[in-house]
Each structure stands twice: as C-alpha cells, then as structure tokens.
Image (cartoon, rainbow, N blue to C red; front, side, top):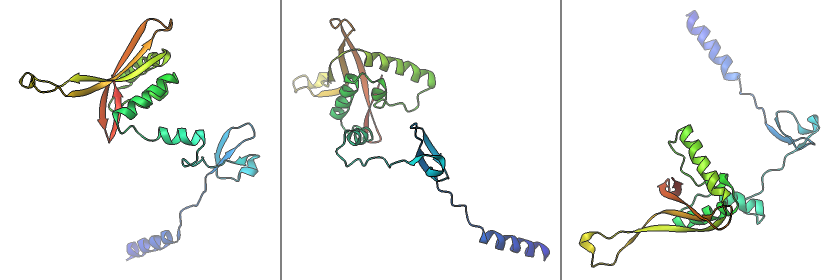
Length: 180
C-alpha cells in the first residue's frame, strides 16, 4: 500500500509541474555581433534584431533568398543557375547545385577543389550536352536526343586557351543536381 501511495503522490506532484517558458531573444550588439539570450536586449546594451525580409518583397536580398531556396526543377533551370554561379565566380553557389548525398569527406574535398577551379575561370557559356539515342534497329527513324549533362565552356586565365568542365545530371527529390 505504501508503494502505491508513494507513486500516486509523485504523480500528483509531477502533474503540477509545468515546463519552464524561456524565450530566446535575438539581439544585435552595437558592434554588430549577434547575441542569442533569454534576457531583454536592452539589459545587454543591444537592440532587438529585425526579422528577415519576406521573400515576397522585391528587394535584391529577398529575391536572392527566395531563388536559393528553390531547387532547379528542370535541366534548363539548373543550367541557368550554374551559369549565374560561374559568372559570379562563386564555388559555393556551384556547390549548392551539387548532389552531395552519400559522399565521403575526402571525396567532397576533391569535388570542392574541382568546383573552385571551375569557378576561377572566365565563362564563355553553359550548354546542355546531348547524345544521340538511335540504335541499329532504328537507323531509318529520326534520332532522339538524350540529355547527358551540362558542359561549362570557359577560357583559362589568359583569355584565349579553351577549357571546359562536364557535369553529369541527377534527378533526386524532384530536383535536378550536378555530379562529376
């Protein structure tokens, strides 16, 4: 009987306990440092951080934010995003288009080095690479072209010598991704 009454007493005590309600505040110090705290920003000599701009606004930051959060749903969208990333000479933007799933750390470092090399060269154009889909049986029929990847045509630093990088394509989770 004492075990039952002890357990019942504990259950009643726990029923009155409520979880602590701590609000995390996002503040910005006068020097621009971001602070996350449970205290009021004013107590720390900081000001409350403004929420991020809505993606529906027409600001450049809002447009950039919304574009980066949407994956390429077609090969043409992927080619456009790759072209913009190479024009910006930003290996991180190219990396955002890469399918990293299942890759080891050492492989990722090798791929990132290749992406950095691609980003460092001047862009000529990005084109969709296709291969002929004809077989021997269909030699009389018109050939159907199959998309095999994206070719980034560039020049070396001297601006004359041609260079290129080829990226294969993967479709995963409704998006198109690059791979080497």
